[in-house]
Length: 114
Length: 113
Image 1 (cartoon, each protein chain N blue to C red):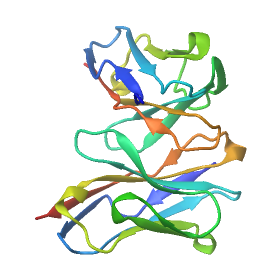
Image 2 (image 1 turned 135 degrees about the vertical axis):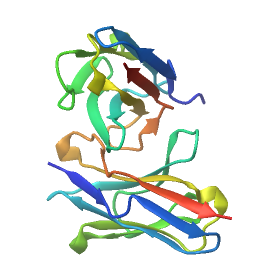
Image 3 (image 1 turned 180 degrees about the vertical axis):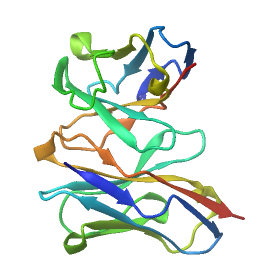
């Protein structure tokens, strides 16, 4: 069975600080990897995804993530956060062999102080 | 293009009552998923429809939960009878491709008292 682990439950940082959120997954086969974000009062929306190719993936709003297959990791980064990045971030994986359902990590609440 | 919509946005019911949640996927999306987030826990998969067929219902907690997607358009998730542990946020998502981005609705917050 797939599982996803996000290292931090809560992160507090100041504007302009760099952000890195850890994500590790457990699955032996080929996976697709996602980061979703839920801003206060809004829907879950996709930040970025990795299916294949370049392991460094760029998403919306200046976010990027790096897939390191040997470490089963897909960490999310942003060099300089803004107050508007305050949200909950979810790492997720799916696999065609496992029916394409998304398996989510527990989420990380990020608070950016102005 | 309209997004995934869910109704109601909130529902408060008593233990033992019945509640029906509705999800309208993005038009043309054959794949429809239900997920649930119980407070303090991760978002968990419930089931997956491809058109009107249940492709995977391995995440359904028990037989008090019944999902339908008649005609392959909107879907309903009925909980009967509701128990306290059913409280949480129920998300619906849809996708055009079997392997592709899933678009989420705003969720229905269910509170069972």
